[in-house]
Length: 402
Image 1 (cartoon, helix red, strand yellow):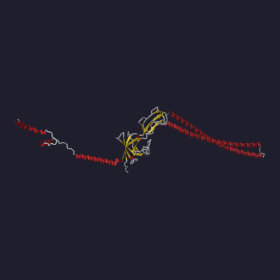
Image 2: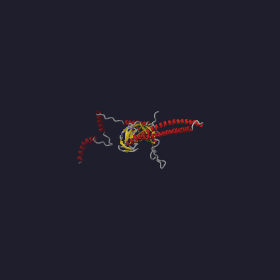
Image 3: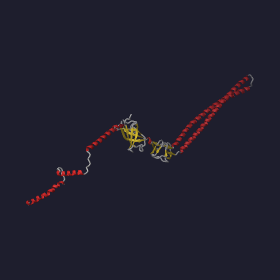
Image 4: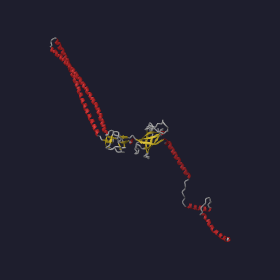
C-alpha cells in the first residue's frame, strides 16, 4: 500500500506548491517576523509609481517649530504680565466691600392735618421747589388772618398813642406858658401888696385896699403853684404815653412773630422738594392724616452720590485723598465709572457700631479692621449708579507726576 500511495503524493505535491507560494501575500504579518523582501520590493515599486502619478499629501509642521512658537508666546505673555504688574498692578488697591451712598432726605410735614393732594409720584425725578404734598390749609389760613388782624389793631393803637404823645407835648408847652403867666401875675401881685402896705402904713390907703392886695398876692402865688403842678402833670402824662407806646410797640413785635409763625404754618401746608432728586419710598395718599415728623417719602439726590469703600487696615498705607479711582458696578460690570478719593474716616467701622468690641476683656482674637474711604464720583450719568448698590473699587496709588 505504501508503494501504491507514494506516486500519488509525489504527483499532488507540484500542484499544491504554486498555491502555497501565492498565499504569503494575503497572510497577515505576524509581529516580530521579517517581511518578505520580494513582496516589499513590489509594493515600493507600486507606491513609487502611484506617487509619481497622483497628488502629493500636505506637509506636516515640524514639532520643534510649534514648541518654539508656544514658548515664545508664553515668554511674551509672562514679560507683558510682569511689566504690567511692575508699572501698574502693584499700585492698584481693590476691594469689593463698597456701596453707593447719598445724603438722602426724609420728607416729613411740619404741621398736622389731612392730606389734600399728592402731586409727587414714586420713582420720578423732581426739581427743587416742586410740590410733593399738599395739606388742607383751612385752619392755618384762618389763624394767619387772625394774626394779621391783631397786628393791624396794634398798629392803630400805636398810632393813637403817638397822637396822644403829640397832644401831651402841646399840653406841656401850654403848662409852661401858664406857669410863666402865673409867675408874672404873682410878681405883680406881690409888688402891689408891698405898695399898698406902704401906703396903708402912712394912712394913704385903706385897710380894705391892703386886704385886697394881700388876697391878690396869695391868689397869684397859688396860681403859680397850680400852673407848676399842671406842668408836672402834663410831663408825667407824656412819660406815661411814651411808656404805653413802647409797650404797644413791643406787643406789636410779639404779634409780628405770631403772624410770622401763622404764615410759616400756612406755607408748610405745601411741602416742596428741597433739592433735585428722585422720589422713593412714597408712603402717603390723599386723605391721610399726618402729624409733624411722620415719614411721607424719601428724596434721593442722585446727582450728588458718593461711594463708601471699606478697605482693610493693611491696604491703607498708600491711599491718599485725591487719588483716581475706578468703579465697577455689580449691576453693570461692562461699564467703569471714574472717581476720586475724597477723605478717610476718622475711626474704624467697629468703633461706630452700636456695640463696639471691647478687646481688653476675655480671650483675644485679632481681626483685621476696616476703614471707610469716601470716594467722590465724577459726574453721575449712569442709570444704575444708585444708593445702596454694591460696587467694586480700585484705587490707583501711583505717585502723581510732578
